[in-house]
Image 1 (tube, rainbow, N blue to C red):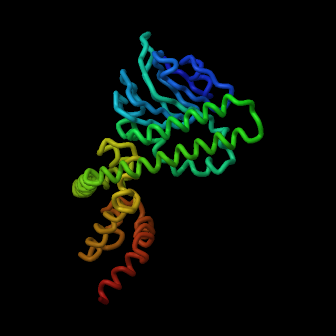
Image 2: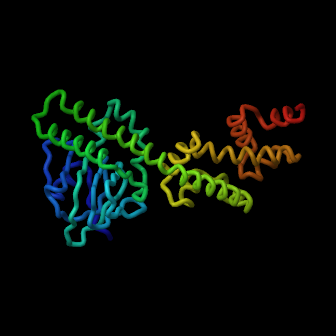
Image 3: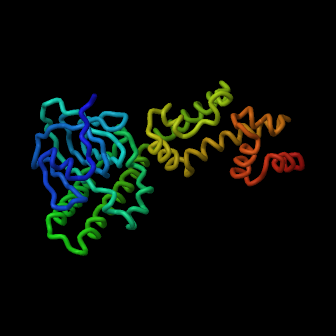
Amino acid sequence: MKNILKVNKPGDYLSYVGATSRHPLVGIVDFESISPIRSSLNNYGVYAVFMHSKVRDDLSYGRGAFGSSSGSLICVAPGQIGGREDVGDLIDIDGWALLFHPDLIAGTHLEKEMGNFSFFDYSTNEALHLDETEQAAFASLMKSIKDETEKPADSEQNDIIIGYISVMLHLCNRAYARQFSQMRQNSDDILVRLSSLLNEYFDSRRQLSEGIPGVQYFADKLCMSSNYFSDLVKKTTGENAGNFIREHIVRLAKNRLMSGVGISQVAYDLGFEYPQHFSRMFKKHTGMTPTQYLSKSIIH
């Protein structure tokens, strides 16, 4: 059984690596001031943001390995596991870590925004790569949060810290938008592969035994986390991955309907358990029922 460090609060991780914090819900680690450190495989009960300019040892997060990559940033959320099990050696590491407990943002505007930060569920090979300007901005925010946690607590402290964290996460969104834009050609290649996988799935009639394929199925096939895959499709096509998949199913349905196949048979052929589920999806996507579509097509 692996030796896993349970990080139920920021202080659990800070104590392990030899750092300290006066705030019970927030912790900042300046790795250069404490490196080298013992590695740890962490079970997170907190949000964490790790920024490194260089890493001299491999750290695993989620599905991948986080190797020595310049200007990399990884975000993890409660319930995730990441790091590298302690095997008795020390690793030389630089950069910063921010850890904050969900209670810090409970009932705040930031809690409502967390669903917009899908990068918390990216796998490691999908890490955000920061340029020097971005690294400097993140380091400055880390220092500001650290300075604030070292001040005596008052009625404004948490709001100030939450403000810094909010800025940091929005900067992540901006940097990812830039990264996706730079990957546009690769994104187009991904869409070609996705279309090929969709055709292969339905041509082989896998839907009859496995049902309608979801986003996770194609993300796994393309070796991506579902959030990264969805964001990639969204940034490239302007619509979410689920809609892209449903659009393909609707095109197949229209072809079958126009060839004279009955509505119920089309539904079963496409993997729907009940025809009404097919009709509901078809109407939601096209604005008309299969019957209305057929009538309109015949009239025109």
